[in-house]
Every structure is written in C-alpha cells, then in structure tokens.
Amino acid sequence: MKRLIMVVDDSPSVRQLVSLTLTNAGHEVVDALDGSDALDKLNSIEGKKVEMMFVDVNMPNMNGLDFIRHVRRLPDYRFIPIVMVTTEAHITKRQEGKSAGATAWIVKPFKPDQLLNIVTKLLG
Image 1 (cartoon, rainbow, N blue to C red):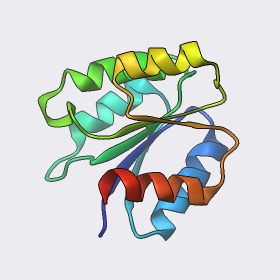
Image 2 (image 1 turned 45 degrees about the vertical axis):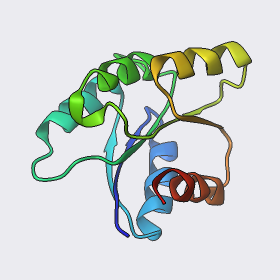
Image 3 (image 1 turned 180 degrees about the vertical axis):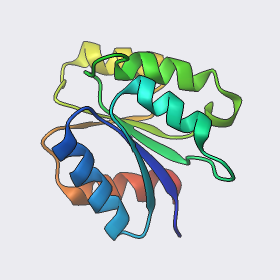
Image 4 (image 1 turned 135 degrees about the vertical axis):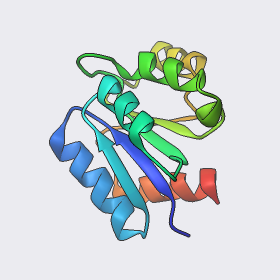
C-alpha cells in the first residue's frame, strides 16, 4: 500500500538513501532540509496527509526534537509514527526524543531493510 512519508534530514546523501529506499518500496516521499522546511512543506501539502516521518536530530534552523514538538501540537499529526534517524545513540538523547514525541529510533549508519521493517511494523 502506497503511503506518504516525510524524510527530514540536512544531509543530502541520507535524504537520498531514505527516499530511494522508500520510493523503491512503493511509497511516496516528501523530503525536507530541516525542521523549518518540513513545517513549511506540511502546510503546503494539499489533498494528502503525511502518514509517517523519518527525522534527523541534529539539523540547522530547527532541530529534530523541536520539529517533533511542533508536529505533535498539530491535530492531523499528533499520533503519526515519527522515527528519529541519527548518529546519536546515547540513552539520554533517546529519552529526550521519546519525551518530544518520537515513536522509534534508528541509528546511522543503517541498512535499507531496517527502514522498511520499521515502516511495516508501524504502518502495517
């Protein structure tokens, strides 16, 4: 089933890898450079709703944790799965992510199959 998934990461290579993996699996992808760009894109999407997000923690303009806090205040996005994708593996960062509203956490580097398994697990 084709799902609309947002990828938010300031690294072009990570955005490309995640987007390509998801697109090859039959999903539609919207990508964003950082949290601010992602909020702008969420507001401009018409007729569709993002069903899941993969979000980096460390980004310029608006980091991933602040972005998630903003998203969780939006009625349409309060309960969608948000997966943190980051090099940060420390337990305190994970707890911070969970407190902000992250559903799951994946540490870079990762394998494309890990992403697809998470999508299947969280979206069915």
